[in-house]
Length: 144
Image (cartoon, rainbow, N blue to C red):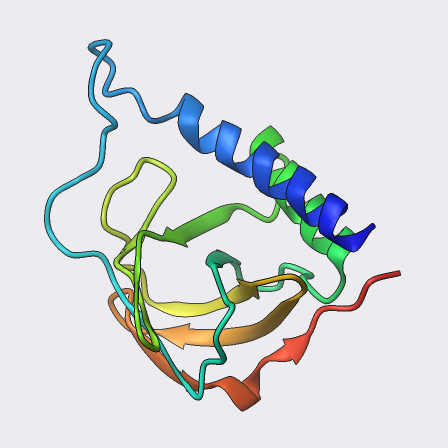
């Protein structure tokens, strides 16, 4: 059941990103050049296949809270989505890109979720889109 809920959320999120992928001239995926920030997670376990960054204070503590955050971001009501990963290299995640597929370079505290068959969340402090944190700072997402 929890894999089905995660899959539904990922599909909805992917569809939202795909609808913004056009460059406005009917072509291209809109990915920007240059480097977005990177998240380095020391001790990152294998199996993490997606990372999403949300505005500070976004509740990501449960699977249902994460789905609400994604839904709210898609509707533009609250908890704006900030960035997603565009690749992995070991424990380095990135570049991080915003919803317009441009390099993400913001600074401050943001809510971050690492996704696998479950998920892990934490508040992470970024400087110019970059952060380094231990995996131990993340807490497992609960499934109601």
